Image (cartoon, rainbow, N blue to C red; front, top):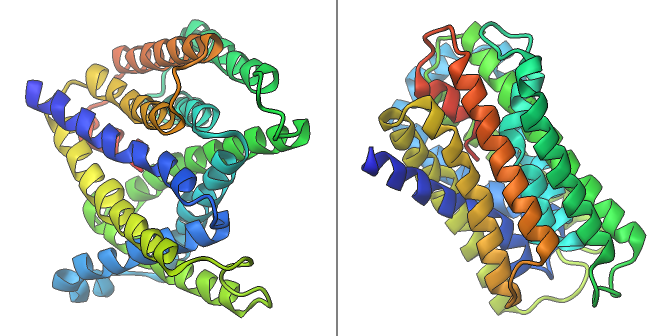
Length: 324
């Protein structure tokens, strides 16, 4: 079990970098960040797909392609563009805390599925989550020394974070439902195909951006920044997407669902840690309250789901829906 916990913590540490990247690359637009990240992710996915390419293509149907395109657009590209926008507009802390309620929103959206937890058992966990989100919003609009951001900028940032949460929630539920209806691909094979399709869409997106009058970057960017841009995106493709997901799957196979589900909160905690270190500050009182409420609410929700689990779905299948 200790090894499983260690794997879960390491996965969270890698996924947390996803929230830091837009801060490190603040001079690049969210569209460029989304296109760049997933072009690199597509390259890595193509390399992973090569050994089994014939088998994958032979089983691939038009319905699969349509599903992959939709899932890639919403669950990868739109999600990350909104997330990067949120980080640019309101910072890492509120963005990561809002997206961190993902396990709860996935449970709510999938409550009509077989084996879903009864909504009445989620009232108290949801109340804690709502209280945590309220703390985030109050902190964003009352923090001193943040006169550079207007109220509308903050509203837009929180809306983008909420939109990112909505995108990933929809993706997590729909992706799981599609795989259950179409079991001719394993979870790993589907992830490879998803990465390839995402890379192709990101390449098209990059081409469209480059063809615009302003080009790939509206303002001149030094070559050293472009080197950092591609280096960070390669790190996200290999670290957050492939290694992080692999560590998460290894953790989920070694831990009971009550514990593996709660490991997801380490993504949020590491994102917060990176953000506070980058900003050279400690969390403010309302941020600490939000962290405590959201972590407790999400963990409680996961435990309620696990204790009311009548089916025998493998742990790793359930855990994968929240892998970034």
